[in-house]
Image (cartoon, rainbow over the protein chains, first blue to last red):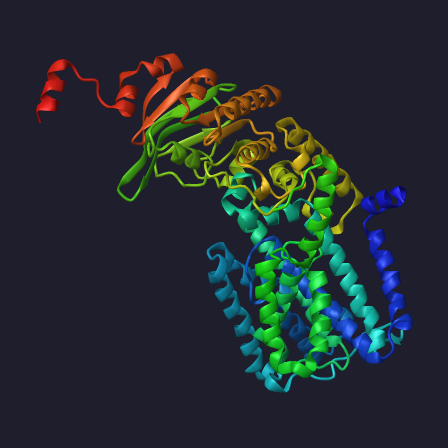
Amino acid sequence: MEKFKSIIRDYPFIAFIIAFVILAFVPSVVFTDVYQSHLATLIFVNIVVAAGLNIVKGYCGQVTVGHVGLFAVGSYTAGTLFLYLGLGFWATLPIAIIVTAFFGVAMGIPSFRLEGPYLALATLGGGEAIRLFIENGNFFRSTFGISDIPTPSLMGYNFDSPDRYYFISMTIMIIAVYFSFSILRSGVGRAFMSIREDPICAAAAGINVKKYKILAFILSAMFAGAAGAVYAHMPPGYIHPNNYTVIEMVTFLAMVVLGGLGHIWGGIIGAIVITIVYDLTRPLYKYQLLIFGLTIVLTILFMPKGLGGFIDRYFLEKRFKKKTGTEKTT
Amino acid sequence: MILKTKQLSKSFGGLKAINKVDFELPKNEIRGIIGPNGSGKSTFFNLVSGIYDSDPGSYIEFDGHDITYTPPHEIAGYGLSRTFQLLRLYQDMTVIDNVMSGYHTRVPYKFFDAVIGRKKIWDQERAIKEEMMELLSFVGLADYAELNASELSGGQRRLLVLARAIAMKPKLLMLDEPAAGLSPVNVDNLMKIIMQLKEKYGLTLIIIEHILKVVMDTCNSVTVFDHGQKIAEGTPAQVKDDNAVIEAYLGKKMDDEEMRKALAV
C-alpha cells in the first residue's frame, strides 16, 4: 500500500487512468437507462466548468459572475464552426478552447482595477453582453438556436447516443481535472492563493500579480471553452441562448461554493451534488432558484469552506490531536 | 552598498511623507530605523520595496540594480524581502503554504511542466516542502504546519511572517516592527531567532522598531526619521545623545531663560 501511494505521488496520472477505467464500466454496470448516461454527461460538463471556476474564483479569489458567458463562447464557437464550415468535434474542441481563452483575457482585464463586488458587476455585464449578442445576432441563429450539431466519431465509431457520448465527456472531464490538479498543487496554485489572500503581500513576495490574475482567467476560460464545446456536441446537439443565462451562472457558483471555494476537490464535489439535486428537483422548478440561492447563503454562513473544507477539517483535527495531544477547535 | 537611495521623495498631496532622503546601507549590517509615529518609516519601506512609486527625481539602487520604477515582484526577484506592520498573513492558507508561497521567486520549474504534472515537479515540490518544514521547525512552528494561519496566536503569527520573508533567501530583509505587541520575553526570543537567521543566511537587515531596547542592543547603526527627513544617523550610542533626536521625541531642550518665558505664557 505504501509503495502504491508513493507511485501515485510521483505519477499522479496513474490515479486518473484508474479513475478512467472505473468510470468506463459504470454505464454497463450501474446505469439502468439512457437518461442516466445523459445526466452523467451533464455532470461531467459541469465538473469541467466548476473546476475552471474554482481556479479563478476559489483559488485566485477573483469574483467572476460572467463565467457562463465564456461557457456560451465555447458552445457557440463549436456551433458556428459546424454551421458555416461543417467542422466536427475534433476540430471545434481545440478552436473553442483557444477562442474562449481570448475571451477570458478580455474578462480578466477589469480585475487589474476592480475587486470583489465591483469586479462581479463588471464580469456580470460581460457575461450578459455575450449572451445578448448571441441572442440578437442572426449570425448565431439568434433565438432559434443552433441544432443538429453532430456528435463526434472516432475511426468509424460514432458516439451518437447519450450512453456512447458518455465516454467522450468522461475523457474530457478526466483530462481537465488532471490539469486542474497539477496546476493547483504546484507553485502556480500557491501563487493564486496568495493573490486571493493579499495581493500587496503577494507582490512583495515576488509574485507578478497581474500576470497570475490573467493566467487564472485564461485557464478557467479554457476549461469553460472545453465544457462548452462538449455541451454543444452532446446529443441531440442543440444549443440555445437561454442555456447561458444568469440562472445557470448561479448554479455554477452554487457548485463551487458548496464544494468548497479554494478546495482542490471543490468544483468536482459541488458539480456532482448540485447537478443531481437539480435533476431531482425538476418537478419543483419554481423553487429551484430559491433552493440554490439558499444553498449558497447557508454554505457561506455555516460551512465557509464548503463540503471539501468540512471533510478536510475533520481529518486535520484528528491528525493534529494525534501529533500534539491537544485539542484544536476553532 | 547593498541599498542606496538618493533624493528619495514621496508626497501625498501636500504632505511630504518622505523628503529628499539619502540612505546608504553596507552589506551585512543591521540597521535600525526609529522615529516618532508618522515620520515616514513605513513609507520609506514601501518606496524601497516598490509598493509605492517614488516622486520624480528620486533614485533607489539595490544590489547594483536601479529599482526606482521597478514593480515590487521584480524587486523581490533581486533578493529584497520585507514584512509588513500589519503582517498581511495569508489567513486562509495553511502555515506551510504560507511559507512555501514565500519561496515563489526560487521555484525552479516552468509553468508548462506544472500543467503537465511531470514527475520532476513533484520531486522538486517535495524538496521545497522539506526545506520549508526545516525553516518552520527552526522558528518553532513545525507542529502547526497544517493549521490555517488564522488559528495561530499573535506571537506565532509574527514568527510565521518572519519565516515567510526568509523563505525566498533574500539578500536584504526589511522588518517593519517585528516585535510590536509582544511581551518582553517573546521579544527577546524573537530577536534571538532573527539574529540566528541572519547568521545562517548571511542577511543584511533593516529593522523599524519602537522598542528602543531592541534597536540599541542589536543594531550596528541607527537612522532616525522625523517629518519625512533623516535627522540623524550613526551608532546607537551616537544617536542616543543626538540633540535633534531628543528634540524629535521629547521636544526641545531649553535653558532656564527660555523655560521661564515659556511658562510665563
